[in-house]
Image (tube, rainbow over all chains, first blue to last red; front, side, top):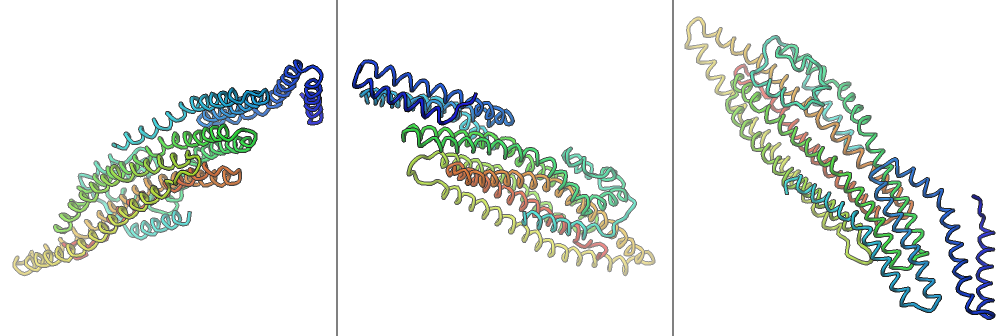
Length: 134
Length: 379
């Protein structure tokens, strides 16, 4: 799949200009246009990241221990980016309280995601301590 | 690397010096079998077959062969080839994770502050979990090394006592027995009660330190203090034992020599006709006992070398993998993770120091044992 920056910029500018024009002419169509442009760009991002994720999975396959941890990190990055996107959208619509709540939810989800890692690390340390007789 | 090289050279010099001119044709002491039984299988594999014979001349030539520099180099090469794979795999795993951390750091600009903090916390936690998870096998190997060292030295104490006694060194036998048992007990306590727990606590502190976000105080000062205390205690214990063993052995050998000379004088002058023959026989017995003692002493040193060299090489390779990963992390700008990797590498440095220090202490004790003159013959 070949996507170049020029096309992406063009799509983004057209989307933004369309939304700006519609704000003046037909205000009720502004939001769907902005949403379409954002979702379109996001889909392109996901398609572009495909080969990177595939390559990373190959790398992680070489080391099972690192692979498990790396998968969690990738998911955390994904959660952070989506949350940021969603909260920005909410702020654009003039509802910052929803944006803040979404960011809090994102942070809690990341925290939940990190719990297995944290418990593995703590289990290992307590295992090492009991192995040494403490 | 320099310290490891100097250590190997010192060990080689000890062995070549002690392995000079040994040949005999008699049976080994009765407790020698127990000593052979205590040798771990992986160490036994690298020893020549004659090492396990009960005939002194075969054992002596096998010990001479095993004490050669080429056999030591062989052990080091085998340890390098064996440990290289796991060190490279550790390095690869850490580099993959560090690359991911760098990616998280780079995408941090496009995230809001708190979300970026959360993502970098998870990436630091991923590196910490991987690093901590990999320590199980490695710490277990270090613990097994100390346990094997203690088992071997414990099995060697009766052999040493018998050989001291048969050479007329009664005081040396008593001193060696007492000092060695005390030394082994203390090393056991220091390793299980101080060294390994301290290493684990330092690992936990390093992990906690790397997970701190914001301006929390660094915990590296606490782990530095713990490491300094370990080095001081191990250094002090080794110096005290080495000094006490050396001084006591010199005094005991002199006292045993005076006693044996009195016996010889009495035998030579009080027993008519046979008196001088008895004195000559004592000299012959002393010579063969001295030979057996050198053989057993060098055999003990060879076993210690075969035990400590792979452990040191493996620890050094692991340390190198952590330092190399830290250098990569520096280039990628992962400061939290680099701190963790450097602290873990320094823990390995202290483990290496403790392993080398204990091995050298026993090598010194066995050298004193092999070189102490037989009181019966004044040899």
